[in-house]
Image: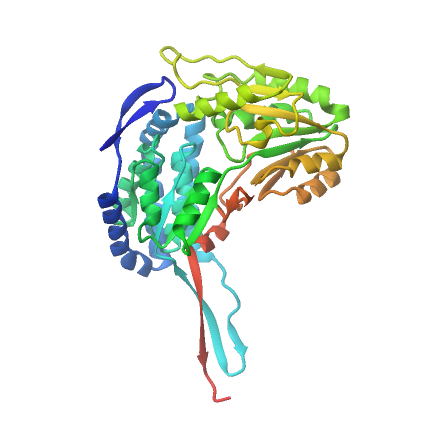
Length: 449
């Protein structure tokens, strides 16, 4: 059974991919279980060496990864190049992190006894990654899981299986057979993986799908990153580059980023100027030239439904410039919506497109309440020349990651994770290793007392 793949730039078929069902899922998990004993028994140094080899394979085959990423997502080369570099860097980062992590207290903590903590892998991890960052999100999940000693069965999104399939082939060369496998397919394939005998599920996707994953996983550990609806609080003294910076962040990957700015909130005294300057900055971002299309027909339809439902009195869209033969692709313009109610669907829901809403607040406290007034709590930013005021607001924002006078600035060393309906768990940084390990306390009696 195969599914037809579509190029989002053209809307046309670009090939087919297999859809795995019970036999393939069972076989993949069994192979991961078989590989687990050998992989988890390796010293951190030996695992690190193999992960380094996988990173090198990614770098050596960057052109092929880029071609797959562009075919599945429509991203321009300016985006795919950096994301492939980040994916390789993550495997290198976790190769080292697993060798240098610290442990809880050990020693003579109870009279007559010596205690210490062993960090053990959880086992076979089922990883389900979304279509907005096929390779990079796979690296965010798989790299720490593998470094911690687990084996992984990764289920890519139905529309973007290509780069994860290539990663699995390279993993077989660098890590060994069964250590990291790809399980392509649709939503049913993902459910089969969750309901299989995996020991843990790491899921990145929508809130509704995340709730379903958690219910099906039962008592097994689940790590969830379920999207965002990030506010950007722009104060009257915001730096001059605020508006251009927000426009670039909002249109990167066509706005299909969980941490992208979505809701600009400013004060009444600055509202008209903010709307005008944001509109000008977003109008300078042209779909087809500066960023790619939406990923698939369903996402395009959802975007159109939300835009059609808005009560915004100001609705300004920029130009689109698809290339030859790309006129039927899923292109959507950079758009600014203003003069709209606070319960507008484009504010309450995560639009996941190249769109910014602008809200007005009478006071800073009211702006903070609007920022924290939606269920999602993944990322946020504050823009002001007043460092004291900015740091105070950053501390009071309900978000797992917050920026001051910047947005979407991330590094392997810094943790990323959500709160509220944005899920729970940690991606990136050495803290992510704890997602995929469990501690075992060992205490030995060394005296007679």
